[in-house]
Structures are given as C-alpha cells and as structure tokens.
View 1 (cartoon, rainbow over the protein chains, first blue to last red):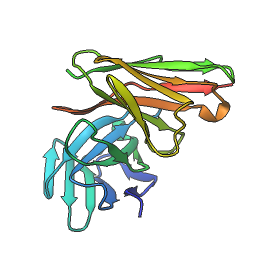
View 2: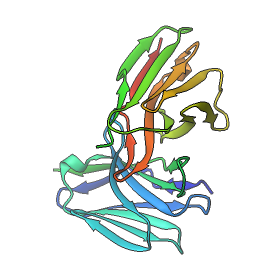
View 3: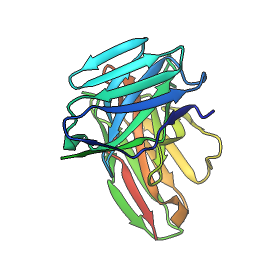
View 4: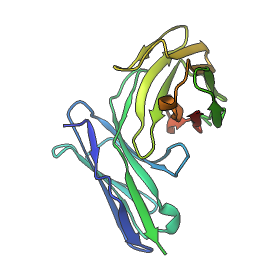
Length: 113
Length: 114
C-alpha cells in the first residue's frame, strides 16, 4: 500500500453543494495530517490540519480523522467556483526538524457555477 | 509570519546548463528546508532535506551529484540542477518545517529545459 492514497478524481460538484474528499494512509505515515489546496501552477496552501480522531471544523471546511480505519477526509460545504483546485492530502510524523510530509497524488475538484 | 521566498518563479535553460533555485526564510530562521519536485498532474515528491551547516539528506533515487543542495545560512537554502536535461523539467518547491502555521511553502519554480 502506498503511504498516502487519494482518489484522483476528477470530482465535479455544483456550486453550493458539499464536496467530499477522501484519503487513506499506511502505518508508516501517522500522527499528523494535512489538507492542502493547490491551484494550477502554484504552490500548495494549507487548508486544514488534524491530529486527533474526530472532526475539526474551520469555516466551510471540516476535516475528519479516523485512525482505526486509517482514513482522513475533507468536506467542503457550500462549494464555490473558487474552490476549484487540486486538493492534496499529506501525512507526517511528529518530532524534530526532520519532519517529512508524504503527499497523496491529489484530487482535482471542479465546482460548477 | 513564516514566509519563504523562492526565486526564480520560472526559468528556461538550455540542455546541459545548470540552474540555481533559491529559497529564503524571510522572518524566521530555518535550520532545515525540504525540497520537492512535482511533475504535471503528479503529487509532490520529496527530493531532499537541506540542513544548515551539514550535508543534505537525499531521498532514495535522487542523484546527489545532479541536484546539489546547499544550506549556507539559517535563512538561505539553494538547489542547483546541474547539467539539466529536458526530463528535469518540473515544478520545484521548497518548504520549511512546521511552525505555528504549519508548513510554509515557497512559491515554486517552474523549470523548463529545452
């Protein structure tokens, strides 16, 4: 199993709908998880981070982590066309300055007006 | 806070030449910098980790002699692609380790080798 796996999509939702993005991970990638948004030709920008089981909400975004199932997801409520981008799931191990992130391949999301 | 400035944003070079990419931490000191490469429609792949004052740590499969990494000071890390070839054309991104706002990425460098 790859360390971090995502459905590559593409995922298309209408404006105002809920977009659901999913990610699974292996045991080697643990403890901390991040969702990044990347527009074409740009660097990733952090959307959410989550470290504990359960839900974490920030505005229209909710990250969910289930360590037993090795599953992390991102829900985007009231999707907007500006949310159209590639969403990258990343996992990392804690501790020290050598804290590497492992990225999934990303899911391309298109929000249709 | 926690801004990483990366230059150049894009560069076109001839095959066989070398290209240097710089990443500077503007408002903090970075003893470590991560260098990633991203091919079109692919994810970010970690190439190496630069460490101020010591040798960089390269990921498996990354050629040390081709991708020279130097971390000369607490605010500057550089990646030099030596003897570039068209297959080296990619998007290169640096990142500082996590701080209060998580990882900070540079703006990326689009390298095209012709």
